Amino acid sequence: DAKTTQPNSMESNEEEPVHLPCNHSTISGTDYIHWYRQLPSQGPEYVIHGLTSNVNNRMASLAIAEDRKSSTLILHRATLRDAAVYYCILREDSGNTGKLIFGQGTTLQVKP
Amino acid sequence: GAGVSQSPRYKVAKRGQDVALRCDPISGHVSLFWYQQALGQGPEFLTYFQNEAQLDKSGLPSDRFFAERPEGSVSTLKIQRTQQEDSAVYLCASSLSGRTGTGELFFGEGSRLTVL
Image 1 (cartoon, each protein chain N blue to C red):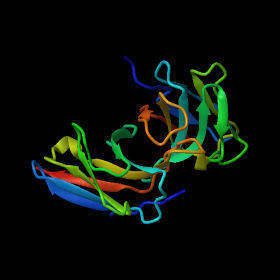
Image 2: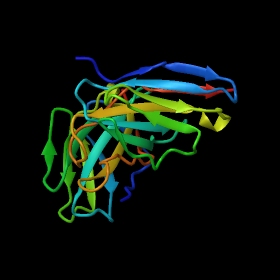
Image 3: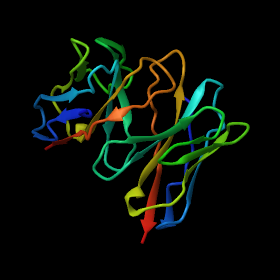
């Protein structure tokens, strides 16, 4: 399974933008880039996903490098409720189960 | 509508006991996944069902772990002769679609198993 590399932790101030980086240099052409986050004592929740083009939704934006070897999750205005572990995951589009393989993720702290 | 429901939320077992963890996925969801999450770690894949068929059980750590989804909806994860290293949160997730790179997984809140 393709692997991702993320910083262990990041800090942000409330109401400021946050850029969470992810490296995935071994990504294959059929891998989608998914982001999930996990709030304390909860199951992971979907944030966003993309293939090649940048994506926006109500929660966040996903910026994908042209060579697809890295991506950045952007929270436009962090709130205290955004404090969570953020996982960047490559998900296969063919063959197997489409299962998500989680890494260690980035623990985001948001300071008031 | 209801999300993914898991029960029990908390389970304490003595070493050697058998446990059963239940997952009620979102109605109509084809795919169902089980994950194990140790304290401070990311979730680790255990097994995958597409409807009632168990298509991937590569993540099950030993033959003490068994999962079923007999009618393609509710699933049960059974752990026989529990060991202390089985202590973890067991997460269930469901997805509307079958095997695909797109599509969102919906996770339950998990069942926290503590083996004494």
